[in-house]
Amino acid sequence: MTQSLENKIIPLYDFFKDFFEFEEIAMGVVKSFWRVVPFDLLRTRVETNINTFITFKIPKSNIAKFLKRHPTALMMDETGFEDSLVIARGLSLDPSKMKFLLAFQAFRVMTKSTLNKKTSAYLKWWYVEEMRSAFLKSPSCLLLSKGKFMATMRFFVKKMGKESSWMAGRPALLSLSLEKRIIPRYSVVEVLLSKGLITKDFSLSAVFQSTENMFLQKFVNPYEEEAPELLNLYQKKVRISEKKQGSRLWRRGRGSRISKKHDGWWELPPIY
Image 1: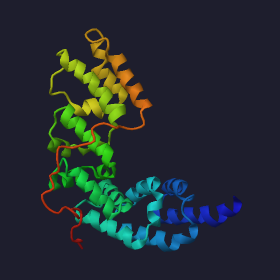
Image 2: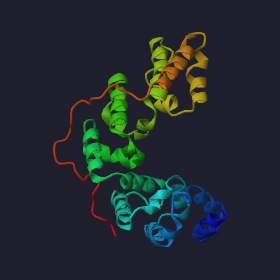
Image 3: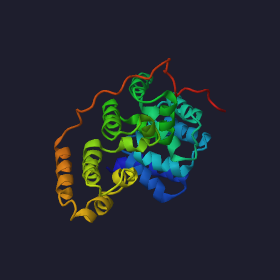
Image 4: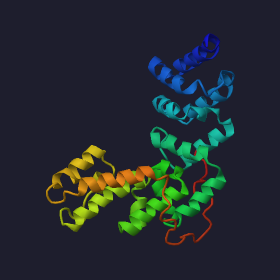
């Protein structure tokens, strides 16, 4: 442990301290970084990739946040690393925003073959521009599995009656757990709607994106007299979701919208 401290951890800490200029940030990065990165590669691949981040005008504070979650990103080969940044910039994302790094991460971890397979699944619901717009709003939606995407879209479109284009404008909803959050909470909403206790223009953000405590305070607790079954219904749905190992429902969309070659929708000329 002493040898590891002297030969790896301290030099790694000094490297990031010099780069970030703040001890707290350097220590935070090192804690998530040192176990997975051989120090002998620091002065080559890691340093090169960090300098590439700087070349793309990515703020050091964003780099620090990104590396705490994805420390192994710096171990990517230099060419692939820069190519992923070029693609993100080609989509007109602002390098000063965290969305830029989220897009970079999405392209970094997937092969072109994987991207094309996911594109085919997404185009069962969206046009190319809708898919592109959704990605620009929430880059992490591209990291969803095909099954997760299809199941969630099926629920919102078939069960809730939303237009698929409406979902393209709210891609953050796709990342929410279908079984642990969306289904249990919508079960409560269905009861409230059936009893006329709320109107159809209820806020989806309030229903699905609020904390559990806020959801209960707004949609369950106020209706204890009119709908005393709500809490038990909600808790039952949550318990059921905890026993399942993943959704097996709703595997099909409503038919592909692919009318022309879609490979490479993300590939735009680099902007220098």
